Every structure is written in C-alpha cells, then in structure tokens.
Image (cartoon, rainbow, N blue to C red):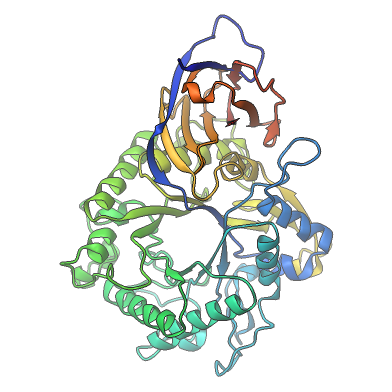
Length: 528
C-alpha cells in the first residue's frame, strides 16, 4: 500500500484538493547528479580582496553553507561546485581597455610571462578557501582566453572578422602546461581541482573589449585538448577536462542557433571548422576531431542554456535533442552556465508578466525561469549538472548576490552584499540535491506553464527530494503517492516566492495535506 500525501503549503480548500495527482517511484532511476555550480567571475577577485570579512564572509555563507540555521531556514544554497576563473592577465596589462573594469582578470603568470606569482588572484583564493571550509564538494578551473602573453594580438579578446583562436601557434603546449601547473599548485595547497574547462563558448565572436574571450575552430579545440591531456598526464593529475561550454544548446546537436542554417559569420571559414554539431564532431570515433579516447576526457559534454529558454515548447525540444544526440554517441550532458541576459524582455519569454521589471534580473520571475530551465535540463536533457553564471556582481547584475560599492563606486573601496531572489530559487535545488543523488521517476507535474516537478533520491534511498515550480498565478493542490517504504518518512517543506527566501514552512512532519503557492518554487523533503 502506498502512502498518499496531499501537498498543501497554504490552508487547503476542498475546491482545489486533489487538483494534481502526482506519483514518485524511487525504483525507476535516471541520471546521477554531479553538481550545482556558480562562478567567481567577475567580481569575486575584488570582493574577496577588498570587502571586509563581515560582508565577504556573508557572501561565502550564502553561496556554500549546507547548514540549517537556528531559525530553521537554510543559511545558504550549498553549491557543490565552484568555478574559478583562470584569467588572461588583462587586469595588470599595460593599455588594457576591457570595460567594465571588473571584467579584467589576473593570471598567475608574472607580467613578463616568464614565471609564476602565487600571491596573485588573492580575492578569488578567498572564496576557494571558503568553499572548502563549507564542504563544497568540487572545484573547476575555467579559462576564457589564453594568457595575454600567449595570444596572437596581445589582448584578452580576439580580432574583428577573425574566427580563429586568439593563440599563437607555438603556445598551445604552453597554455596547457600553464593550466595544469595551476591545477597542481592548487592541489598542493589543499584544493583538489576536479575539472579544467579550457575553452568557453567557442561559437561567440569574442572580438570586442566587453570581456576576456576567444573563438575557436574545431581543429584548434582538439589541438588544445590533446595538449592539456598530455600536460595533466605528465603532472600525474587525475583532473578531468570539462569540454564543450557551447554558447547555445543547439550548437551541441545542430548547425547553428537555427537548425540547418549555417551561421552567416562562418561563411568564409572552412565548413569542417565550424564549432557546431559538437557531440558528433568530438565524440564520434569516425570524426577527425575525435577526443573521446583521451585519458582525461570524461564521457560528457558541457553546454549553456542561453537563448533556448524563451518559449517553453522550444526549450523542451532543444533539450530532448541534446539527450537524443548524447545517447547516440554514448555520452552524458552537463548544463554548466546560464543567466538572464539583458536583451530579453517579458514579451519574448513565456510566463513573464507585463509589469515585470528587474534592474538586475534577480527577482522572483527570473527565479521561476531558473526553476523551469533546471526542470527541463534534468527531465528532458538528462543533465547531470546545473550551473548558474555569476556568483556575485556589482548591483547584483545577473548574479546570485549583489555587491554594492557604496562609498566611492569602486569595488576596491569595499561595500555591502545583498542576496538576490534567484539565489534562493536556485537553492531550492542545490541545497537539497547533492552530488550522487539520482533523478527518479515523477508523474503528474510536467506543465511548464503551470506546475513542473522533478524528484531525486539519495544514494542510500533514505531521502527523497521533490522540487515543484508553480509558474501559475493560482495555488495548486496536489495528491502525491509514495511507496509504502516511505510510510513513516518525515516531511519538511521550503518555499521561495516573492515574500519568502527558501523559508521553512514548519509543516507537521506527519501531515498529508499541503498546497503549492502561486508563483513559487517549493521543495518537499522526505526523510526515513
């Protein structure tokens, strides 16, 4: 006999009781979760170096804490992977012109490129230290550009009308050795590096001073990855190469952002060098760019969920095609980065209202969008991971945490930190769903316009976590079936909405009547 639970996080009424009938089957399992992530770029180095301990310590607690506070609410969102930006050295470069200023990044090379200075990136190292103290399970080093000493134009970004990688022909090995050396040094300092991501969004024309970046041809990507595999092997590291970081989900399985239509920007480039069809190009053994046999190359590809999120049906279709293509070539998928870019307006996106306005894209409507994308990435793309882009940024611009340099407008003069709503919305997933949890079968909550739910089970089977995203403007009752094994499981519930931040609802642990609040993300935890 199964245990029947009526989910209700407000006072239940008979008018809506049983509106949704949901069943969870822990015996039917899917992918194993690897991580939930965010990055220190770009303001992390400034905050960690110049903000006082009370403020930067609060940022670290919000991002990494896995504890429930005395008030019964999570102290933070318990990120399980932290992304460390191995910068290109543009911060200290003579004549550097990257704007905004905080997007200039240090590297660990000396200015002349002839030696290492391990005292650099001190602010970033603060958050690496805090991540470890709070129990963040994994660490990834990512690079947007080779060090400026290795680039063809001496800058941290590429040239106009040039889709080739901004790296000198004789510097592939040097760049690989640099990344592996940093990983080895981190390990010696007690910070094991699980992944190195050497290339970011190779499809983008990183040809302006808006940030560090470089485009890449397919042959150039393979050449660098082969060199990095060599360097990691020579240094006896078990660090894995985190490859892909595609700028749009469709680049993973198709020609460009519009399927079947080549990107006009590549019209003068050799067709085989177009950085698309990434799974086929790099994981088909018959491809000249095959990298699946490298020692440090795991059987997965990483991609970003940008741009595909506008319309729910389009997002579902794109994510399902990722899963189909990955299965075809025997690999898995990680969604490694997303944030709500500034050019998207409410009219262009499903489930946003006409009165929506968010100066930093950090509000509850964006949090609900995060929930919908994460649901689709897990359920439709079978993603093993879900990553947000910036952990912190000036004024909270597209970031989980806002940092405000209130005195002078300069981060170097300190400031205050403020948690954005999207921090807590992501926490509805990341705080409770830990590495090693498996996604399990859930039926009855699959409507992205109303209620979409996804469930996970701990490795020992003693905890079930169900996350519900209610994008509608109505409260939703739901009847939930769990196996008899969970008859005596104790229930807790946590909600994020316009008025609550991952708040403990203090439900009766034996209660069987609940409701999903309007415009909310709700996590139900069952513990044996």
